[in-house]
Image 1 (spheres, rainbow over the protein chains, first blue to last red):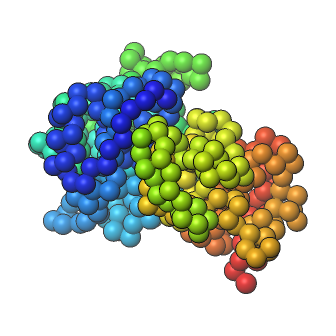
Image 2: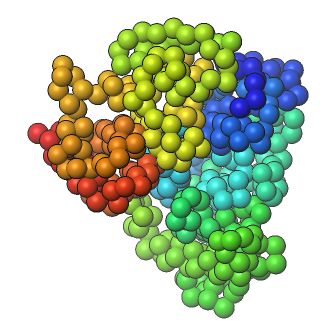
Length: 275
Length: 155
Protein backbone atom coordinates (compact mmCIF):
# COMPACT_ATOMS: atom_id res chain seq x y z
CA UNK A 1 0.00 0.00 0.00
CA UNK A 2 1.06 3.57 -0.66
CA UNK A 3 1.39 5.73 2.43
CA UNK A 4 -1.53 7.78 3.73
CA UNK A 5 -2.68 9.46 6.93
CA UNK A 6 -5.27 7.63 8.99
CA UNK A 7 -7.62 9.80 11.02
CA UNK A 8 -10.66 8.97 13.14
CA UNK A 9 -13.62 11.33 12.85
CA UNK A 10 -15.66 11.79 16.02
CA UNK A 11 -18.68 13.47 14.46
CA UNK A 12 -20.42 13.92 11.15
CA UNK A 13 -19.32 17.53 11.04
CA UNK A 14 -15.70 16.66 11.72
CA UNK A 15 -15.76 14.02 8.96
CA UNK A 16 -17.34 16.53 6.54
CA UNK A 17 -14.74 19.17 7.39
CA UNK A 18 -11.87 16.72 6.90
CA UNK A 19 -13.34 15.57 3.60
CA UNK A 20 -13.64 19.19 2.43
CA UNK A 21 -10.08 20.00 3.55
CA UNK A 22 -8.38 17.16 1.67
CA UNK A 23 -9.28 16.68 -1.97
CA UNK A 24 -7.76 13.19 -2.13
CA UNK A 25 -9.21 11.91 1.13
CA UNK A 26 -11.49 8.88 1.27
CA UNK A 27 -13.99 7.77 3.87
CA UNK A 28 -13.34 4.45 5.59
CA UNK A 29 -16.12 2.53 7.35
CA UNK A 30 -15.76 -1.25 6.99
CA UNK A 31 -12.99 -1.03 4.42
CA UNK A 32 -13.96 -4.31 2.78
CA UNK A 33 -13.57 -2.84 -0.71
CA UNK A 34 -11.35 0.17 -0.09
CA UNK A 35 -8.52 -1.63 1.73
CA UNK A 36 -8.13 -4.42 -0.90
CA UNK A 37 -8.28 -1.73 -3.62
CA UNK A 38 -5.51 0.23 -1.91
CA UNK A 39 -3.45 -2.92 -1.37
CA UNK A 40 -3.68 -3.58 -5.10
CA UNK A 41 -2.51 0.03 -5.60
CA UNK A 42 -5.64 0.85 -7.56
CA UNK A 43 -6.39 3.73 -5.18
CA UNK A 44 -4.06 6.16 -3.50
CA UNK A 45 -5.94 8.40 -1.09
CA UNK A 46 -3.94 10.98 0.87
CA UNK A 47 -6.10 10.48 3.97
CA UNK A 48 -8.42 7.81 5.27
CA UNK A 49 -11.16 9.28 7.43
CA UNK A 50 -12.50 6.53 9.67
CA UNK A 51 -16.23 7.14 10.19
CA UNK A 52 -17.09 3.77 11.74
CA UNK A 53 -17.34 5.20 15.25
CA UNK A 54 -19.69 8.10 14.49
CA UNK A 55 -22.93 7.58 16.43
CA UNK A 56 -25.05 9.58 13.93
CA UNK A 57 -24.24 6.99 11.25
CA UNK A 58 -25.55 3.96 13.12
CA UNK A 59 -28.93 2.64 14.07
CA UNK A 60 -31.92 0.83 12.58
CA UNK A 61 -35.39 2.24 13.07
CA UNK A 62 -38.96 1.97 11.72
CA UNK A 63 -41.29 4.98 11.60
CA UNK A 64 -44.33 5.84 9.46
CA UNK A 65 -43.98 2.86 7.13
CA UNK A 66 -40.29 3.54 6.52
CA UNK A 67 -37.23 1.60 7.57
CA UNK A 68 -34.17 3.75 8.21
CA UNK A 69 -30.67 2.27 8.38
CA UNK A 70 -27.59 4.29 9.35
CA UNK A 71 -24.83 4.33 6.74
CA UNK A 72 -22.20 2.71 8.98
CA UNK A 73 -24.48 -0.22 9.88
CA UNK A 74 -22.66 -3.46 9.20
CA UNK A 75 -24.13 -6.21 7.02
CA UNK A 76 -24.24 -8.61 9.98
CA UNK A 77 -26.36 -6.12 11.95
CA UNK A 78 -28.90 -5.82 9.12
CA UNK A 79 -28.95 -9.60 8.65
CA UNK A 80 -29.63 -10.24 12.34
CA UNK A 81 -31.85 -7.24 13.12
CA UNK A 82 -35.29 -8.18 14.44
CA UNK A 83 -36.54 -4.79 13.23
CA UNK A 84 -35.36 -5.39 9.64
CA UNK A 85 -36.63 -9.00 9.67
CA UNK A 86 -40.08 -7.74 10.64
CA UNK A 87 -40.19 -4.72 8.31
CA UNK A 88 -38.44 -5.99 5.14
CA UNK A 89 -37.36 -9.62 5.73
CA UNK A 90 -35.87 -9.80 2.23
CA UNK A 91 -33.43 -7.02 3.09
CA UNK A 92 -32.16 -9.03 6.08
CA UNK A 93 -31.90 -12.08 3.82
CA UNK A 94 -29.97 -10.08 1.19
CA UNK A 95 -27.53 -8.86 3.85
CA UNK A 96 -26.97 -12.46 5.01
CA UNK A 97 -25.89 -13.39 1.46
CA UNK A 98 -23.23 -10.68 0.98
CA UNK A 99 -19.62 -11.89 0.71
CA UNK A 100 -18.70 -14.15 3.61
CA UNK A 101 -19.14 -13.98 7.41
CA UNK A 102 -15.91 -12.04 8.01
CA UNK A 103 -16.86 -9.50 5.34
CA UNK A 104 -20.37 -9.16 6.78
CA UNK A 105 -18.85 -8.49 10.21
CA UNK A 106 -17.07 -5.40 8.83
CA UNK A 107 -18.71 -4.15 5.64
CA UNK A 108 -21.38 -1.43 5.79
CA UNK A 109 -24.51 -0.59 3.81
CA UNK A 110 -23.36 2.99 3.17
CA UNK A 111 -20.03 1.74 1.86
CA UNK A 112 -21.71 -0.71 -0.48
CA UNK A 113 -24.04 1.94 -1.93
CA UNK A 114 -21.33 4.61 -2.23
CA UNK A 115 -19.00 2.16 -3.99
CA UNK A 116 -21.77 0.99 -6.37
CA UNK A 117 -19.96 -2.13 -7.52
CA UNK A 118 -21.92 -3.43 -10.53
CA UNK A 119 -22.20 -6.84 -8.82
CA UNK A 120 -23.02 -5.63 -5.30
CA UNK A 121 -26.26 -6.73 -3.63
CA UNK A 122 -27.46 -3.63 -1.77
CA UNK A 123 -27.87 -1.31 -4.81
CA UNK A 124 -30.59 -3.64 -6.16
CA UNK A 125 -32.52 -3.38 -2.88
CA UNK A 126 -32.21 0.41 -2.75
CA UNK A 127 -33.34 0.78 -6.36
CA UNK A 128 -36.19 -1.74 -6.23
CA UNK A 129 -37.51 -0.42 -2.92
CA UNK A 130 -37.33 3.18 -4.16
CA UNK A 131 -35.09 4.14 -1.22
CA UNK A 132 -33.93 7.63 -0.40
CA UNK A 133 -30.21 8.10 0.18
CA UNK A 134 -29.75 10.82 2.79
CA UNK A 135 -26.35 12.55 2.71
CA UNK A 136 -24.79 15.29 4.80
CA UNK A 137 -26.03 17.74 2.15
CA UNK A 138 -29.32 16.52 0.64
CA UNK A 139 -31.68 13.63 -0.08
CA UNK A 140 -31.21 11.62 -3.26
CA UNK A 141 -33.78 9.23 -4.76
CA UNK A 142 -32.34 5.82 -5.64
CA UNK A 143 -33.41 6.37 -9.27
CA UNK A 144 -31.02 9.33 -9.45
CA UNK A 145 -28.31 7.93 -7.18
CA UNK A 146 -26.90 5.02 -9.21
CA UNK A 147 -25.11 6.20 -12.33
CA UNK A 148 -23.29 3.18 -13.70
CA UNK A 149 -20.09 1.36 -12.87
CA UNK A 150 -18.63 2.58 -9.53
CA UNK A 151 -20.41 5.90 -10.10
CA UNK A 152 -23.05 7.63 -8.00
CA UNK A 153 -24.63 11.06 -7.63
CA UNK A 154 -22.42 11.77 -4.59
CA UNK A 155 -20.45 14.96 -5.07
CA UNK A 156 -17.15 16.10 -3.57
CA UNK A 157 -17.32 16.32 0.21
CA UNK A 158 -20.63 14.47 0.28
CA UNK A 159 -21.21 11.41 2.46
CA UNK A 160 -24.13 9.04 3.02
CA UNK A 161 -25.68 9.43 6.46
CA UNK A 162 -28.60 7.03 6.26
CA UNK A 163 -30.82 5.14 3.87
CA UNK A 164 -34.61 5.33 4.10
CA UNK A 165 -36.55 2.37 2.66
CA UNK A 166 -40.33 2.57 2.16
CA UNK A 167 -41.70 -0.75 3.48
CA UNK A 168 -43.24 -2.71 0.57
CA UNK A 169 -46.11 -5.18 0.75
CA UNK A 170 -43.81 -7.88 -0.55
CA UNK A 171 -40.25 -8.25 -1.75
CA UNK A 172 -37.89 -11.01 -2.82
CA UNK A 173 -34.25 -11.22 -3.90
CA UNK A 174 -32.60 -13.97 -5.91
CA UNK A 175 -29.05 -14.02 -7.18
CA UNK A 176 -26.85 -16.39 -9.08
CA UNK A 177 -23.51 -16.08 -7.33
CA UNK A 178 -20.30 -16.69 -9.22
CA UNK A 179 -19.12 -20.01 -7.76
CA UNK A 180 -15.63 -18.69 -6.90
CA UNK A 181 -16.08 -15.02 -5.99
CA UNK A 182 -19.65 -15.20 -4.70
CA UNK A 183 -20.47 -11.95 -6.50
CA UNK A 184 -23.79 -11.90 -8.38
CA UNK A 185 -23.49 -12.95 -12.04
CA UNK A 186 -27.04 -11.66 -12.02
CA UNK A 187 -29.39 -10.81 -9.20
CA UNK A 188 -32.96 -9.60 -9.22
CA UNK A 189 -34.72 -7.70 -6.46
CA UNK A 190 -38.48 -7.58 -6.97
CA UNK A 191 -40.76 -5.53 -4.75
CA UNK A 192 -44.48 -4.91 -4.88
CA UNK A 193 -46.60 -2.31 -3.20
CA UNK A 194 -50.19 -2.02 -4.38
CA UNK A 195 -50.14 -1.87 -8.18
CA UNK A 196 -46.51 -0.81 -8.32
CA UNK A 197 -43.88 -3.45 -8.97
CA UNK A 198 -40.19 -2.53 -9.23
CA UNK A 199 -37.54 -4.90 -10.56
CA UNK A 200 -33.86 -4.04 -10.08
CA UNK A 201 -31.17 -6.13 -11.75
CA UNK A 202 -27.61 -6.25 -10.40
CA UNK A 203 -24.50 -8.10 -11.59
CA UNK A 204 -25.53 -8.33 -15.23
CA UNK A 205 -24.80 -4.81 -16.43
CA UNK A 206 -22.30 -2.01 -15.80
CA UNK A 207 -24.48 -0.94 -12.89
CA UNK A 208 -27.78 -1.75 -11.25
CA UNK A 209 -30.79 -0.98 -13.50
CA UNK A 210 -34.57 -1.32 -13.52
CA UNK A 211 -36.16 -3.85 -15.87
CA UNK A 212 -39.18 -1.73 -16.77
CA UNK A 213 -40.84 -4.17 -19.22
CA UNK A 214 -41.00 -6.72 -16.44
CA UNK A 215 -42.33 -4.13 -13.99
CA UNK A 216 -45.23 -3.30 -16.33
CA UNK A 217 -46.08 -6.96 -16.94
CA UNK A 218 -45.80 -7.90 -13.26
CA UNK A 219 -47.92 -4.86 -12.32
CA UNK A 220 -50.78 -6.45 -14.32
CA UNK A 221 -50.24 -9.95 -13.00
CA UNK A 222 -47.69 -10.86 -10.34
CA UNK A 223 -46.65 -14.28 -11.61
CA UNK A 224 -43.42 -15.73 -13.03
CA UNK A 225 -45.30 -16.47 -16.28
CA UNK A 226 -45.76 -12.71 -16.83
CA UNK A 227 -42.09 -12.29 -17.79
CA UNK A 228 -41.86 -15.52 -19.77
CA UNK A 229 -42.08 -13.78 -23.16
CA UNK A 230 -39.94 -10.79 -22.18
CA UNK A 231 -36.20 -10.45 -22.57
CA UNK A 232 -33.67 -8.20 -20.86
CA UNK A 233 -31.97 -6.09 -23.52
CA UNK A 234 -28.47 -7.59 -23.75
CA UNK A 235 -26.87 -4.71 -25.71
CA UNK A 236 -25.18 -2.96 -22.78
CA UNK A 237 -24.66 -5.93 -20.45
CA UNK A 238 -21.31 -7.21 -19.18
CA UNK A 239 -19.36 -9.76 -21.15
CA UNK A 240 -16.29 -11.56 -19.84
CA UNK A 241 -14.72 -15.00 -19.44
CA UNK A 242 -17.56 -15.96 -17.10
CA UNK A 243 -20.43 -15.31 -19.46
CA UNK A 244 -21.68 -13.54 -22.57
CA UNK A 245 -24.16 -10.65 -22.62
CA UNK A 246 -26.93 -13.02 -23.71
CA UNK A 247 -26.07 -15.46 -20.92
CA UNK A 248 -26.37 -12.67 -18.36
CA UNK A 249 -29.61 -11.40 -19.90
CA UNK A 250 -31.07 -14.87 -19.55
CA UNK A 251 -29.78 -15.24 -15.99
CA UNK A 252 -31.37 -11.90 -15.04
CA UNK A 253 -34.70 -13.17 -16.36
CA UNK A 254 -34.38 -16.50 -14.54
CA UNK A 255 -33.50 -14.74 -11.28
CA UNK A 256 -36.49 -12.44 -11.74
CA UNK A 257 -38.80 -15.43 -12.27
CA UNK A 258 -37.39 -17.10 -9.14
CA UNK A 259 -37.81 -13.91 -7.13
CA UNK A 260 -41.41 -13.54 -8.30
CA UNK A 261 -42.16 -17.18 -7.47
CA UNK A 262 -40.65 -16.66 -4.02
CA UNK A 263 -42.59 -13.47 -3.55
CA UNK A 264 -45.87 -15.08 -4.55
CA UNK A 265 -45.38 -17.62 -1.77
CA UNK A 266 -44.68 -14.89 0.81
CA UNK A 267 -43.42 -17.23 3.53
CA UNK A 268 -40.21 -18.00 1.67
CA UNK A 269 -39.07 -14.36 1.85
CA UNK A 270 -38.83 -14.38 5.63
CA UNK A 271 -36.07 -16.99 5.68
CA UNK A 272 -32.96 -15.32 6.94
CA UNK A 273 -30.38 -17.99 6.31
CA UNK A 274 -29.54 -20.77 3.90
CA UNK A 275 -29.40 -20.57 0.15
CA UNK B 1 2.79 7.15 12.64
CA UNK B 2 -0.17 5.92 14.65
CA UNK B 3 -0.25 4.87 18.25
CA UNK B 4 -2.23 1.66 18.60
CA UNK B 5 -3.25 0.34 21.99
CA UNK B 6 -5.02 -2.96 22.02
CA UNK B 7 -5.43 -6.17 23.95
CA UNK B 8 -4.22 -9.35 22.30
CA UNK B 9 -5.22 -12.59 24.02
CA UNK B 10 -5.86 -10.67 27.24
CA UNK B 11 -2.52 -8.87 27.28
CA UNK B 12 -2.40 -5.08 26.81
CA UNK B 13 -0.02 -3.87 24.08
CA UNK B 14 0.98 -0.46 22.78
CA UNK B 15 2.74 0.06 19.45
CA UNK B 16 3.79 2.95 17.26
CA UNK B 17 3.15 1.80 13.73
CA UNK B 18 2.90 3.33 10.26
CA UNK B 19 -0.66 4.39 9.39
CA UNK B 20 -0.74 1.80 6.59
CA UNK B 21 0.13 -1.12 8.89
CA UNK B 22 -2.36 -3.96 8.67
CA UNK B 23 -3.66 -5.68 11.78
CA UNK B 24 -2.13 -8.97 10.63
CA UNK B 25 1.30 -7.34 10.39
CA UNK B 26 0.93 -5.87 13.85
CA UNK B 27 0.01 -9.31 15.18
CA UNK B 28 2.80 -11.18 13.39
CA UNK B 29 5.66 -8.66 13.23
CA UNK B 30 5.13 -6.50 16.29
CA UNK B 31 3.41 -8.85 18.75
CA UNK B 32 5.40 -11.79 17.32
CA UNK B 33 2.37 -14.06 17.24
CA UNK B 34 2.91 -15.98 14.05
CA UNK B 35 0.06 -18.45 14.40
CA UNK B 36 -2.11 -16.07 12.35
CA UNK B 37 -1.21 -16.72 8.72
CA UNK B 38 -1.19 -14.58 5.61
CA UNK B 39 -2.47 -16.67 2.73
CA UNK B 40 -3.82 -14.73 -0.23
CA UNK B 41 -3.41 -11.24 1.26
CA UNK B 42 -6.48 -10.24 -0.80
CA UNK B 43 -9.22 -11.01 1.78
CA UNK B 44 -10.41 -14.18 0.09
CA UNK B 45 -8.77 -17.14 1.84
CA UNK B 46 -9.48 -16.39 5.52
CA UNK B 47 -6.13 -17.75 6.82
CA UNK B 48 -5.61 -14.46 8.69
CA UNK B 49 -8.95 -14.64 10.56
CA UNK B 50 -8.83 -13.42 14.17
CA UNK B 51 -11.52 -12.21 16.55
CA UNK B 52 -11.85 -8.48 16.98
CA UNK B 53 -14.15 -7.61 19.88
CA UNK B 54 -15.55 -11.12 19.68
CA UNK B 55 -16.30 -11.37 15.96
CA UNK B 56 -14.30 -13.02 13.18
CA UNK B 57 -12.50 -10.60 10.86
CA UNK B 58 -9.84 -10.97 8.19
CA UNK B 59 -6.86 -9.24 9.75
CA UNK B 60 -5.21 -8.64 6.36
CA UNK B 61 -8.09 -6.28 5.54
CA UNK B 62 -8.20 -4.31 8.79
CA UNK B 63 -5.82 -1.45 9.51
CA UNK B 64 -3.99 -1.59 12.81
CA UNK B 65 -5.44 1.85 13.52
CA UNK B 66 -8.97 0.49 13.18
CA UNK B 67 -8.15 -2.00 15.92
CA UNK B 68 -7.09 0.72 18.38
CA UNK B 69 -8.83 0.00 21.67
CA UNK B 70 -10.04 -3.41 20.49
CA UNK B 71 -9.73 -6.82 22.09
CA UNK B 72 -8.13 -9.29 19.72
CA UNK B 73 -8.06 -13.05 20.08
CA UNK B 74 -5.68 -15.06 17.90
CA UNK B 75 -5.21 -18.82 17.62
CA UNK B 76 -2.59 -18.57 20.41
CA UNK B 77 -5.32 -17.38 22.76
CA UNK B 78 -7.70 -20.27 22.19
CA UNK B 79 -6.21 -22.97 24.44
CA UNK B 80 -6.74 -22.30 28.13
CA UNK B 81 -4.51 -23.72 30.91
CA UNK B 82 -2.93 -26.22 28.55
CA UNK B 83 -6.33 -27.47 27.37
CA UNK B 84 -7.25 -27.09 23.71
CA UNK B 85 -10.39 -25.13 22.78
CA UNK B 86 -13.21 -27.56 21.80
CA UNK B 87 -12.88 -26.46 18.15
CA UNK B 88 -9.13 -27.18 18.20
CA UNK B 89 -9.79 -30.53 19.88
CA UNK B 90 -12.40 -31.46 17.27
CA UNK B 91 -10.09 -30.48 14.37
CA UNK B 92 -7.42 -32.79 15.86
CA UNK B 93 -9.76 -35.71 16.42
CA UNK B 94 -11.58 -35.47 13.09
CA UNK B 95 -8.36 -35.04 11.09
CA UNK B 96 -9.75 -31.75 9.78
CA UNK B 97 -6.40 -30.62 8.41
CA UNK B 98 -3.58 -31.84 6.28
CA UNK B 99 -0.95 -29.18 5.64
CA UNK B 100 -2.38 -27.00 8.42
CA UNK B 101 -1.87 -23.63 6.77
CA UNK B 102 -5.55 -22.65 6.77
CA UNK B 103 -6.22 -24.19 10.20
CA UNK B 104 -5.70 -21.16 12.48
CA UNK B 105 -8.08 -19.12 10.34
CA UNK B 106 -10.55 -22.00 10.09
CA UNK B 107 -10.60 -22.42 13.87
CA UNK B 108 -11.15 -18.71 14.47
CA UNK B 109 -13.93 -18.60 11.85
CA UNK B 110 -15.63 -21.72 13.22
CA UNK B 111 -15.48 -20.58 16.83
CA UNK B 112 -16.93 -17.20 15.80
CA UNK B 113 -19.68 -18.84 13.78
CA UNK B 114 -20.66 -21.31 16.54
CA UNK B 115 -21.30 -18.40 18.92
CA UNK B 116 -24.11 -17.26 16.59
CA UNK B 117 -25.29 -20.67 15.59
CA UNK B 118 -24.52 -23.32 18.22
CA UNK B 119 -26.40 -26.11 16.40
CA UNK B 120 -25.75 -25.61 12.68
CA UNK B 121 -27.04 -27.80 9.85
CA UNK B 122 -24.64 -28.90 7.09
CA UNK B 123 -25.96 -26.12 4.83
CA UNK B 124 -25.39 -23.55 7.56
CA UNK B 125 -21.85 -24.83 8.11
CA UNK B 126 -21.06 -24.44 4.38
CA UNK B 127 -22.47 -20.91 4.46
CA UNK B 128 -20.54 -20.13 7.67
CA UNK B 129 -17.24 -21.29 6.16
CA UNK B 130 -17.57 -19.37 2.89
CA UNK B 131 -14.84 -16.98 3.96
CA UNK B 132 -12.20 -19.68 4.44
CA UNK B 133 -10.42 -21.74 1.83
CA UNK B 134 -8.74 -25.11 2.42
CA UNK B 135 -6.85 -26.65 -0.48
CA UNK B 136 -6.17 -30.05 1.11
CA UNK B 137 -9.13 -31.61 2.83
CA UNK B 138 -12.05 -31.09 0.50
CA UNK B 139 -13.79 -29.76 3.62
CA UNK B 140 -15.40 -33.11 4.52
CA UNK B 141 -13.52 -33.54 7.77
CA UNK B 142 -13.71 -29.84 8.56
CA UNK B 143 -17.50 -30.06 8.48
CA UNK B 144 -17.28 -33.16 10.68
CA UNK B 145 -15.11 -31.27 13.15
CA UNK B 146 -17.54 -28.33 13.25
CA UNK B 147 -20.37 -30.70 14.13
CA UNK B 148 -18.30 -32.44 16.80
CA UNK B 149 -17.22 -29.11 18.30
CA UNK B 150 -20.84 -27.93 18.31
CA UNK B 151 -21.82 -31.07 20.19
CA UNK B 152 -19.02 -30.71 22.76
CA UNK B 153 -19.72 -27.02 23.30
CA UNK B 154 -23.46 -27.46 23.81
CA UNK B 155 -22.88 -29.98 26.62
